[in-house]
Image 1 (cartoon, rainbow, N blue to C red):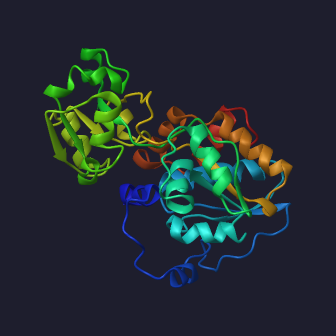
Image 2: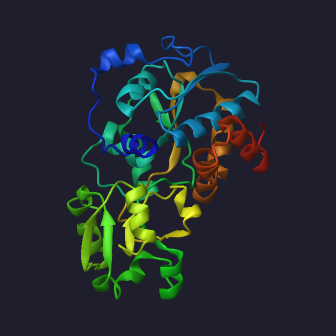
Length: 309
């Protein structure tokens, strides 16, 4: 279920089964009520998509804001971007954790080829509706990566995708079927890094089939999302992507302009400044693998980072 929900974030999943109007009517608060317009600037509605990492980030935002005296109403686990984005645009939700690359290509400019964080954010700043803005992006990214086992990385002294060029001809790469035709898939790795793999195995989307194939040496490299908890538990290494084959997917607050004030903006930017991929990965492991409480994990992270909680 987790991996399917992550697919929604990246825009690869199928369209929603219900029409948007029906879906919006069905989604609501934790108690089942309808979404309500964002209240005054001293209070906000914080929403999230319906997968654990986004819910965790929403909990971190909500906890950080409450610690600064902001009255927070949570609307977590709303659904896919097709459902929550219109609600942020009209102000029913004031704040939601987003991923800049996915937001750009699914809601703002599907034809965009922006790749780096700066390029993606510049395109979002130019293309978002007037009612919306993104705040400062965090260094944390939940994005595609070329991932290998720790043993393979150590044996070949690997830290970067570029270092695979002399090895690729003896390697099998694993990824979902669509990776074979995506611009940043096999074609992108060939164009940017000169990688031509010996074989390509069709697997799932950063899920148990992919992870087993990698740890069993059925494939020697695979497309794995950078905050997949098994990177820690299975001792995997996500290789650096210096040529930005995979577009940036920085965690960033998307806000309704009229629903936030300086206190709120500063609090969210402070969270983003301290959030790293490694930190997010550790928290994802805590909630997904160890089944820790979201609020407990959020509060502990804020305290560890010296932020009000």
